[in-house]
Image (cartoon, rainbow, N blue to C red; front, side, top):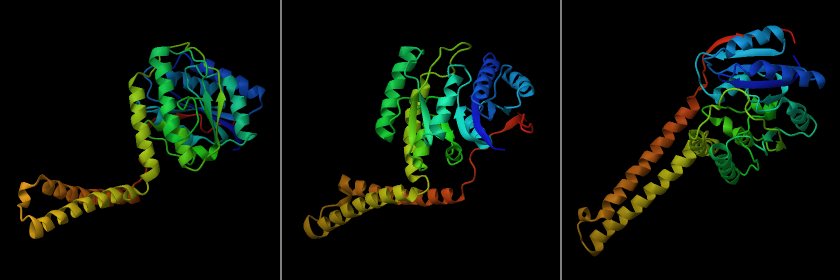
Length: 319
């Protein structure tokens, strides 16, 4: 199967918007003569989202569905969607109709014609609450640009386009969907672009995100920086820390012992520096042991992303 596009749509309790979204995507892709598959991942919805997806698969040959047994989060949904995607270009978008399918041709063109590995949408004009979403988002993206060196204005925009080899080369887990451009950069994909896209006011339902996503986002950024640099070589970090700490404690201990024997003959146990030196040596040894254990874990780690899917539909149809 040689498809132009895979459109991956994670969703949670979005039954009102799904039919309108699929019909809009179908209309745009038909006008542009793009062969496609629309992969909808139901992240354990408690409304009738899966019923709507089932009806859409019967009506549209391009629609496929994956249903999680419970709510795992957006990153696991994207992980499963990426794993299933077969299109030469993969576009992700949210299911709440705030992302416009009219942006699909432009994003597709930037990947195919302009040669970008990844293109991220930039919602330059937003219709979200200025206090609870817009201002924190600007701060969050500013910190991201400074720490990662990736000059994107809206790192967390759900509307993105990728070459297929990009999404097949990265692992999206936890809540790392916010940092897919960072994962792509560390995987060796350097041509990352940005496109100003239309942001639409929410038509149905309410936002699923709160203030905690910004706190979690900063913590995830620190995690991804650590994993990207030391995930496959933890001994490089813990070994260096262990060597430095142990040597500092050893040097201090030797100096104290030398001072006792040749100079002052003072009791070592009365000096706080003696206990600090011993503590440093113990900590250095523990850092080394942590590095060895981490290396063993890395060498023997299997697939961490085992998400239970309850049902799949639409995968045996001819497009």
